[in-house]
Length: 328
Image: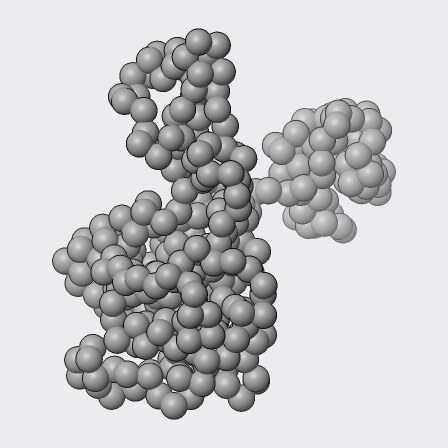
C-alpha cells in the first residue's frame, strides 16, 4: 500500500476525473490516465471512507468500468453508448416468412423440401439463377368502429351511431388515398363485419371477403398483465394459434411472379392488430398490450421484396375529427 499512500488525495481525484473526461471525449488519453491509477491506489480510495470526495471517485470508477466493459475508450471506431441497461433479444431473421429465394443447390443442401407453391423458390435450373421478388406488398390494418359494449353476445355488439360514422369517414379516407386496393378482408365478428361493409360503400369496386381467423381473442400472454383481463390458458392456447395462423396467411413478401405493388386492407380488432405489429417487426410478442389503437384507426405495414418490414404508421386517426376519436 506504499504506492497508494504516496499519491496525494487531490491528485488521485484529479486523475480519476481526467480519466472519465478522456473516456467521454473518446481519446487515447483515457488509457494513459487509467494507467496512472494503479490497482493499489484504487484499493486505497475504496478503503478510505473519511477522504473528501471519496464517494465521487468511487462513482467515477464504477462509471469507467461500465464504459470499459462496452469496449469504449480504446481509441478504435466505437460509439460511446452505455448499453448496460438494454437487453438484446434476437437479430433480424431475413427468412422470417420462409419465402426467401434460394437456388436449387442451396435448397437441396438445406433439405428444405419441394419448392413453395407461391413461386418464391422459383429459379432457372439451366443457369441456376435465382428469381427474386421485385414487388412490394402493403397491408392496411383497420380496427372496427365503436360498438355497443352492453351486448351479451357477439350478434348484439353492433356499431353505435358514432361507430358507423367512423367507418364512413374511414372509407372516404381510403378513397382519397388514390390507391388501388386488391381486396378488403374482414373479421366475421359483427362489429368488424359492419365496419368493413360501410367502408366498402365508398369503393364498391374493391372485392370484399370475410375470414374467421381475424376474430378478436387473446393472441399471447402479455407482459405486463392486466388485473381486469385474465384469459384462461385454454383461451391463449386456442386464440394464439388462430391469430398466428392469420399472421402467416397474410404477412409475407411478394412472390417473383408478382410484378406490381399491391395493397390489401384487413378490418379486424385491436388485439389482433397489435400482435401482428409485434410479429411483423420481430418484436417480443408479449409486448402487444403495451400499444394502443383507436376505433377505425389505420396501421400501415410495408413488406419489401427482400423481406424487410416497415411500420409506416400505427393507430392513425388523423382522418377522424377529434370528437370522433374513441378507443372502445
